[in-house]
Amino acid sequence: MALIDDVKAVLTRLAPLGWKDLLAKHGLDIAAANIETELARSLGTVRRDLKGFEAFTTSGIRAIEPGSPAKSLLYHALASADVHPTTDGNPSTDPKVYPTLDELDTIENYIYSRAKRKINAFANPVIVVVAYQYRHPLRSPHGKHADLAYSRVGVSRVGTEGYRYDAALRGFSSTPKSGGRGFAVLPARYAAFIAEYRNPSVSDSILRTVALDRNLVFTFPVHKLFPGPECLLNEDGTPLNIQSLKFVEYHISEKLRRIHTQNPDNPDFIPPLPIFNLNAPPFTRDSLNSSDLVTVEKRGASILVVPHAHPTMVRTATQKVGGKDEIARFKVPPQNNNNRFWTSLQFRAPNGRFAPEYANIRHEVVSNGTQQTVRDLIALKNNAYVKKLQDGNYEAAHFIDDTCDGAIGINISGLSLPILPAYSLVTAVDFFPQVDQIEIQKWVEKIANRPIGLASPDIQFAQGAPNPLNDGRFDGRTGARLTQSGSIPNPTLPDPMQS
Image (cartoon, rainbow, N blue to C red; front, side, top):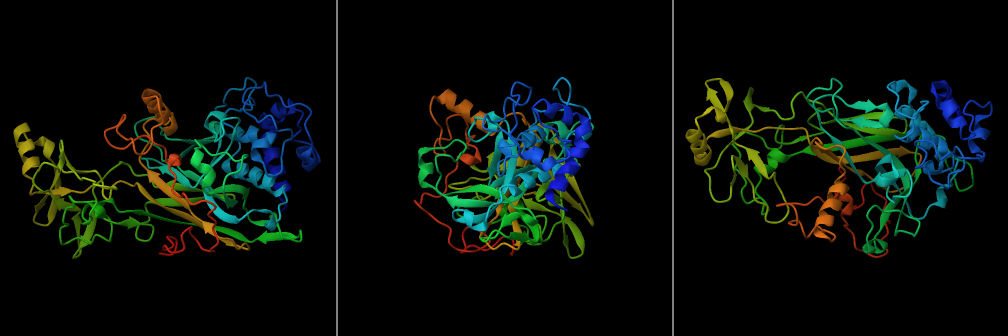
């Protein structure tokens, strides 16, 4: 089936749900008999006075602009969280009136297919896996109009129940379905693009760009990849058939192991109890030895990386030792001048942080023959509680959560280019989901009346700073080029997908 047939199926479903009437106000008929011609023609008037369309770029003149989702009126209408197919322009409570992620993916693929790009049309091309999102102007890289934002780093978040897709928002919400306590997990969406590996041009947009950027090399996504013969053309203009896209993931959580690992940046490491294997769960959990970190769900030519939900944010864990389940634990050292922060064990970090900053020591593992229980020390009287924590020399329970990090790679059949995986962060819950990290950074900079760099963390915070990840710059080489064919940017490092 041709892509235009898939697009027609999407529009046929959505048309009677308010979208036909809404888009007709722009002179677009999504029920037209010849839908391919209708989507390609210039529209007489784009009604940017209508709710949600104020953010549509002024250079957009047709429903489908080849190779440019941001200039495609149809994509903006379906993907923008500000556009709703209702008579008053307010969100509908019926999720079925909105496109699904699979349907949005279909529209994206069609937009890129219409560009009819040849494989030799790209400057220093690489394949890059990115997290991406269609954003309001205030959150787009350039701040001028709604646009796709791409990142080599994707952020998903753990939770106590499965993810909840809010169709009206065209995104995921951390609010539980029940509306009660807890958090729904937040997936991250990834896709593979052909990107140009080069210095920025004047037309490129980088979020919070700095003067140094003109000398750095970035990966600029240009063309989304999807299976089939309509994605790309060979140099002679014949279809280049991409047979399949197979995303692969590797994630690891090793916080407990690092507590017990000696390192110059971990001077307060705790020797492990000799019965435990630090390279096995729960001390080291990864995609090879654990099935409860993340799941990859296909959404057309894109994927969702979905953290596994657990009823509690943290919990104790066991390791099989000699046929017996032993609660993971460690011997608490006596208090000294450096290793306590109130009632928690503290780990110093002379340079980079090698291990967690704190560990819980308020839950003692008590063994009674073949039985083990965890005793909450808060039940002790105040003086006894304080003395117990100060004296140490008892075994405290380790707690695990489900945060981890890793890589998202891809195997592509039918296309040979260097592949750059995405870095995947599965992080803690966001207690302020409506507040962007950049907004916090701007607030601190306003207070200090100057930019706050990575070298000035003490302006507002005792440790660390609110700097968003995109403010980081890691390569100062001028004119750097990727010439090696490999699975990761640095071919001297082991491939996380193959380890």
